[in-house]
Image (cartoon, rainbow, N blue to C red; front, side):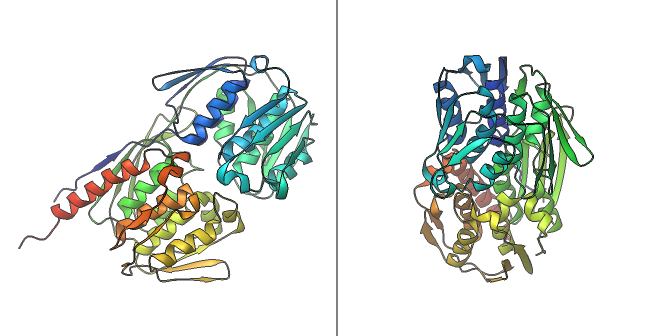
Length: 432
């Protein structure tokens, strides 16, 4: 019997969109971004640049930016990042090139309790004058700074802090070498090459040479992080088949996909537009019974944002799944170690926590339903919505608006998937 396919188009990748917007606003000339990210994080960044004086025009699904440091308003600047940690970290480096006496980066909501100590430590190390508020949480204040040509090692993996260093050096026209202990997402490096930056890998270092950048035309692929929730939904829904269309397939972004394959998922990838700055294409997943596995440290760092989602998938897998829980999970919109345990406990999962390792025994009946706002953590709420697919009683998510931070249409898209799930359940129901 042929499977019915659920076709899914993810929203624009907010990580790539925000990088494109920041660089376009600082590079002199007119740049164009196609496929706009319309989540709250991205809209707040657009508004912040508009308020700072940058002319931005939105037309259909295209955004035109007339960038350059001379287009910013004179004097000290204040940027309201709302809840976007990506914006705050990248702007902490990028805006130094404006040469202002003081720039303030303000926050709201969950970002107010996000610790910025690692960012501040690294930027101070290269000569940036930067301070934060109480407990190294926002607001962040940057003073006029200069940095020297520098070599720096980043011991804790963070693509955003690496990007802040690159953007600081780039817009101050300094040469810099960065060494990462763990490879992290390279969206910034790929995009900088698109704008004409001389950036390359040399003997284990990322080497950036100063030079004049040119405006660019950027097409933003679909967001793999958003698609992950629907891949997970299909992976735990018997007889399902899903096709994710036009999604970003950066090899440093798809660790979650590789872990699903290790668990036994039937996945095929159709690569397209490989000549572009970011690989992209389609992903097809056909349901197949999953097996529990041991998640490695390397796996963890390749998919830190999807750890709660992997915990949900493990509930439907055969056997035991072990997941290391490193401290970097704590400094998210919520403490995701506590949040993940909270979710598992409240749906009646069979699990234990031993020496910072989560052990989940899959294949158990989940009969408990409950209501929560999931600490207003967008990824925890979306993971809970996926978990609800295999629970006998529903999980009710309270105050859903906070999910708009990254995915405004998530619940609409999930309702479509639930209708699809009902159709295939009826389609494959045994005939009497």
